[in-house]
Structure formats: C-alpha cells, structure tokens
View 1 (cartoon, rainbow, N blue to C red):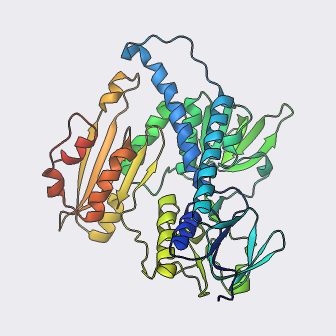
View 2 (cartoon, one colour):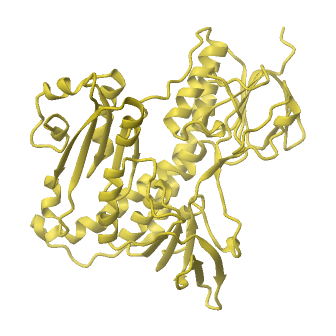
View 3 (cartoon, rainbow, N blue to C red):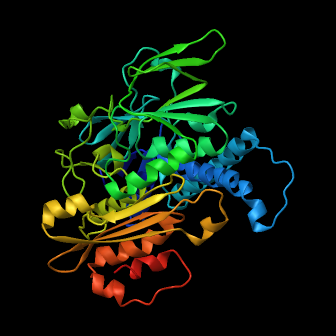
Length: 448
C-alpha cells in the first residue's frame, strides 16, 4: 500500500501535461492534474489552434479580391468580427471538453484550481487541500512578457486578442517574431490598419535570412507598416478612448489597440519550487536533464516551462517520454534535432534543420540550391507574389541539412520534407525522386 495520495500529480493541463497524465495512467499510475485556467493549455485555448482559425478566416479577404479572375461574380461582401470571434470561441470550448474527456476516460482526477509545490512530494491547492504524490510533474507552460513602459496597462497580449469586443480600425503590434507577424497578417487582411514596431531592424531572426528578406516586402506590399528600431516607450490613452503610441524617436502612432508580442517567459512565479530545492534559470525556466528530471529526484518538468523548445508537439513528446520513462519502464528522451516549424504569416514560411548561416558555421563547406517561382495559385491574384524554396546541403556528404520554404501551404509541404531531413537523406536522393506535377512541392526535387 502506497504512502502517497497519487503516484503522479501534474501541475498544468496543457498539451504536455495531458499527454503525460494519459500515458502515465495507461501504465497503471494513479494520476491527478491541477489546472488554474482552462484544460487544454496555451495551444488549444489561446494559441496555435484559435490563431490558425483566424488565419483561415482572414484568407477569404484576399480570395474575394480575386474572385473575378476565377470567373465568379460576388455581391457586396461584409465581415462580422463578432461572428468569427464567437465561432472560434465555441470551437475552443469544444476542444476543452475533448481534453477533459481524455482525462476522464483515463481515470485521471482533475482539479480546476491553482496548485503550488510545498515539498519534494507535496502540493497545496488554492482551496487549501494538501496532496501528496510520489512524483510531481510541472507543465505550466509560459506566459507573455510585458515590457516596463508607461501605459503598459493599456496594451494587450496574444492572450486577449481573441476576445476583442470589436474589430479595431488601427492596431500597433510590438515585436517581429512569429506571434507578432501572424496577427499582423490576420488583422491586416480583415481591414485593420496595422503597424508593426520593433526594437531592431530584423524580422523572424531565427529563420533563414533568404526567407525573411523576401517575406518582408510582401508583407509591406499587403499594407502592413513597419517601424524598425522603434521600441514602444509610452502608450497614452486619449479622451476618446483611442491610444497614442510613442515608439522610438518617430512621430506618435494613433491606434485603437496595442498588442505586445515580445516573447514569452516560463510561468514559474510563485510555484513553490524553492521548497523542493529547485533553483530557476536566468529566464525563470526549470532546469532539467535529458529525461525532464529537475535537481529534485521526485519532480520533473516538460514543455515551455523548461524553455528548451517552445512548441506544442515538443511538449507532447516530452510528456509522453516522461511517462514512459518513469511509469512504463522504458527510459527515453526527446530528440531536438530537425524539428520542423512554421510561421503562419501571409504568405507562410516553414523550415526544418539548419539555416545557411548555421550550416556554414558547423560544417564549413555547404552547397545551396534555390527555386524562385510564382505559385500557380497566385496566377489568379492581383499581386504577383513569388514563392521561394531553399535547400542547404553538406558539401562533404551531400546530406540535406536544411529545408526552407516561403509560399502558399509551406507548412503542409514541409512536413514530408522534414522526414527526409530527420532521416539524413542526401541531395541525390531528393533528385532521384520523381516530381509530383503540377505542384509547388515538386520544386523540392527539381533544384539543380
């Protein structure tokens, strides 16, 4: 008979926490999870899922502009933000119910309240209940960072953007990472005057420069204004409720909504980790070993709270690996090489493996193959936007080190290419593959 209330107590019911809970329970563990917000976590509730729905909806704005070229005659088109917002919210509700059902179906007890760690084997719920567990898993994710500026209380983050009471006429977004540029594209397409301000003169700095240099003028051509080297200094609320944004040394920018998207930080404040002797990293992250174990043998952490790779599929893999390691008798870790990623800008970009700069630094001699083309679907578009594909190849072994795509459906095309990069395939093997014609994906095997 165990001396603990549960074999595993999970703090955080996001993608990583739910996967770990389900798999641990399937191995026979008695599991409980606490979630202070909503079951599903950032991705499902206030991140990639609702965002992608907004992206899909905003695409209609571009397609409606070109309907005549397709042979269609469309009457007056009107957009209703409230209908879209509420539909997205209803789908989020559906997904939360599905995640909750997953916990129930696997007999995982769940508490809808905050939990903090009080020792190596104990947690305390907000209601005051003390619970013991043989193992504790922290999977609380990350939270948007707000800068210390005058008037920051007038700003929103990506958490709140899904609940805007009405569509603004003017929006200022600070930041030039994926969150900033994805929402810039959405609201620009929906008719909002969008201005992106950033502290540097770079966008999407972790992506290959060849992609970002081509993406920027396309975004500008679609009407998004950029203010580089112009971080927000102050936000003033005007008498009519509008906002005046002081960014850098330029003229103030009038806005109805100001969204800050300058990064996310592990949500470890007040979590009680010090009670178990766990010291946080410089960014507030929980340091862990390759299996997710902290400096306390009974406490593990997975997902964004570890600040390794902040991607939902990575958190899911880490959660699954943790459960197999601790409860399944099959120790395994998560590999962080060749992780594909995408930015759902308009048009999107996607990448896997090394950028050209990274490849040159690590491997010395590299070969680069590119394809600059106009996607067939863009033949109907009023703007002649071009696609761009790039392969980075090891000069010594001919192994494909990186694939970088800009163009429609880039993420869908990249997933298959990511398998090839992960498997270590060579450029010769790409070349030996018959092209699928007519498609954009065929460019991957036609570059010479």
